[in-house]
Length: 101
Image 1: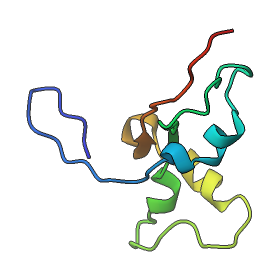
Image 2: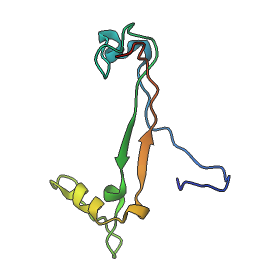
Image 3: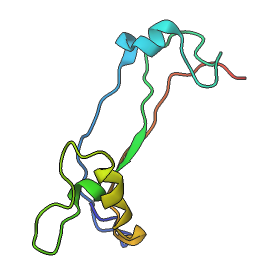
């Protein structure tokens, strides 16, 4: 969705869900930095971002610039999209880290 800064309600899409108490990272006490996941909490940790511009970029004839299975095609197509025209998908982080460094 386009980021609206004038108060217009924006559209969002659910893209992922993290683990909770069944999360293998929590069960193993894994955290970054090390030593911060002390209790193997019942919450979750997830975040990520991906540039979709290369996968969605099209040639002037309407065909997609990249094809599946071509090494480097996604990054090459991403490089053709100006920064202000990028399409970025992101997941925000919520974590279960219970200790400090």
